[in-house]
Amino acid sequence: MRTRMVLSLLAALLAQIGCQSSPTTKGKTDYSQAFAQGRYAEAYEESTRVAGSPGATGKARAALVAGLSAQALGRPDDADRWLCPLTVEPNREIAGTAGAALGLIEQERGRHAQASTLLLGAAEKLEGAESARAYMYAGDSLAKQGRIAESRSAYQQATARAGSDRALKTMIADRQTASTATRNTASPGPVKYAVQTGAFTSRDNAVSQARALASRGSPRVVEITDAKGRRLYAVRVGLFTSRQDAESLRARVGSTARVVAAYGE
Image 1 (cartoon, rainbow, N blue to C red):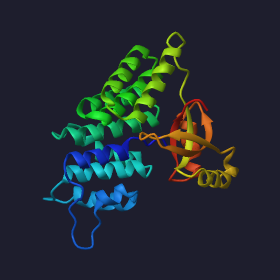
Image 2 (image 1 turned 180 degrees about the vertical axis):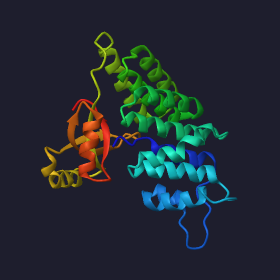
Image 3 (image 1 turned 90 degrees about the horizontal axis):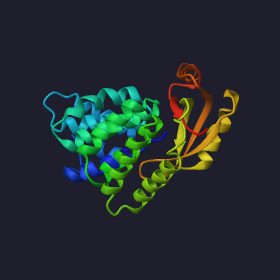
Image 4 (image 1 turned 180 degrees about the horizontal axis):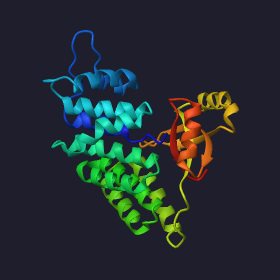
């Protein structure tokens, strides 16, 4: 999956609001720590408990962690449920982080008009490198819609906010170069869809899963990059012009699989 930005956004948010630990009771999990350590199922369980408890403190932040954990677990519908109400939170970091995560979910669904709107809104609420990343990904979705001038403007905004983050600046510069090269070309072709069964930091793990899916028809390992510039290896099966056809395969592959937009495959 192209996920993306979430770990970085949450880490920055926790630092900005000065709360590195979440409230816990005896025997309960610190959901912020669990999320930071990649224990997303634990983070989701505890953060939803806090977010849904009457009178609990820090409910908005708990809901944010619940939504981001659901996204990391490949459960976009649950992520939507927790994140959507947060986009109107008075706390700009929480609202911006929720909006950025929702924008990236829409981007994976191939809904680039919705994605660009959410990401641009998030970019205005976030600061520094997190704002830059939101602008960068908004630029990607604008480009997929053929809105090249707006895409270039978003990349320029991203560059202005990237600060001293050299890796991020390189990612933005690469996109600007590609945008310039395609300035006079036709609009992008139709979106294609694939079924993604997982994404791994280890290529060997990805290859192992792909082999196990051989009966599903030509599984492949696709190299992707998350929002922090880290290389991931996604396992994908099928390539469809119809999302409905991709959903049909997903139902046969298993509940943890998800349909993603597949570009350049």
